[in-house]
Length: 251
Image (tube, rainbow, N blue to C red; front, side):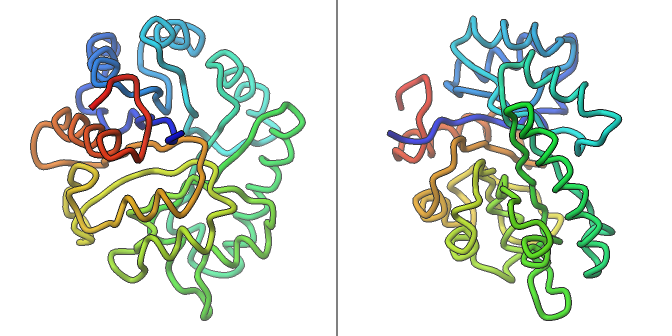
């Protein structure tokens, strides 16, 4: 059985607001996506869960703040209301620029993992490109794993290439046992260039998907030169049409 397909709502952020959410998410449902990552504007988590259920969809995961003692109750309540156990989130360049900063990042992640686990929830770290920079002769992510051995990943296969410095499928093979969620993204490997519909860029998307067993595949395109809904539709067609993911609409 192919892995179910979701979409990160950041992909359609320029189209999405409280007034357009019903139409935009409705169009995503018509395309056939089984889930979305995030809560659409204008909805509470519980309202969005109900809206998606009417379209045979679910919240696959929520991208949000790293858990802390101050926000953990709010995070757990939102996950419960949305009907998902999966929280994901990321960090930025200053969190990966030295071994000491990575150690501090690891401490934050470990606290979040442990806190969520007591509520039956999970945390998966979402990467950008800087986690695959070399810090003191090691990939930054490997330092994180040393300091936080239980970390799970929402691996973004495009960012993991670090603009051609790494081969995405080789990264997937190294970390496959930690990949709970996978962001499927494609592009030219040129920094700051727009992404392209999944399957039409430089990433061997099929090989990456086959090399791991995530619970969800999640399309995310940060930018696109054209109508983003065309890219959303073409990404679905490629992934479901080639048997790499499962959706609600046959291709």
